[in-house]
Length: 130
Image (cartoon, rainbow, N blue to C red; front, side, top):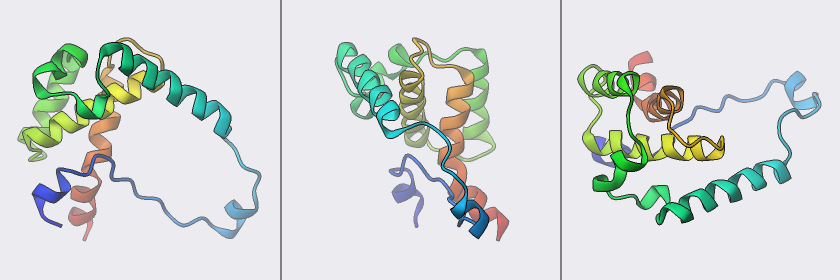
């Protein structure tokens, strides 16, 4: 896929096939009801801010997702070393805001931003590994 098309895909996650042992093991993790409650709460945070994260205009992005020094370093590295475009950075910041909302956090942590940037970097890692 071309760079401009990839810029429009927010989450790029590799999901390896399960082994037979993993397939037969009891399920772990949160229940669907628990996840649903977190998603509804996150959507409510966004509604109160006046805009869903996916629709945040770039002009409001830094107000809703301010970057601390660690976050600024991550973005700088993503652009300078990883070749990430401004559009891709903005989309990752929106995803980081959503990760923080799902965790019930008022501020976007450097960890949330790093996670969001990792979701964007999958395609680049896949091509590098070839």
